[in-house]
Length: 166
Image 1: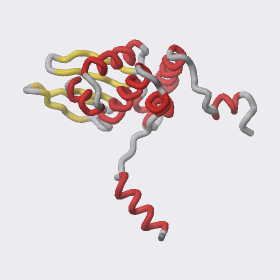
Image 2: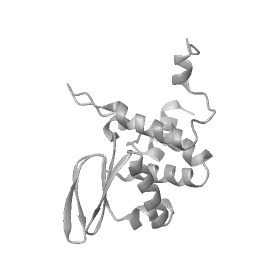
Image 3: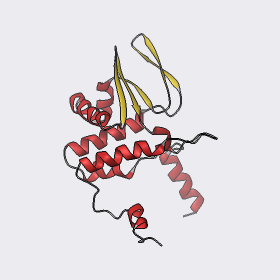
Image 4: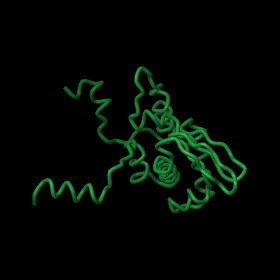
């Protein structure tokens, strides 16, 4: 099969826009058990549903400004997207908030969520501006430590630090 034809088929199936997802989220989803799996699913649905550009959201009769990396909506709708109960999703969101991975506040007719470090995770860079990148990943690393530590998968970063990747 022609490589260009194959590439066109893949592009047609996948579309043109992509989201960067931390490997830790996939590990939680596919190898996690119980709470870890639901937290991974909650984080994945947030990354999928947050705004990738500034915009406006209408809930009932109110209009809200939504910046990149923020979600404004109803918890029940978000839970329905990922196939879990609203109660389970709220528990997972509370855990993510307590770990500093998201900011969250209740609205009169919904919920506001900001994914911390979204610009860094997605690779956005502004000219002449440094993004405090370490904060979000340090929070994710600390959360990972509290959940029982890193999996036994080969970690290129730590291997490089130990002289394993040369």
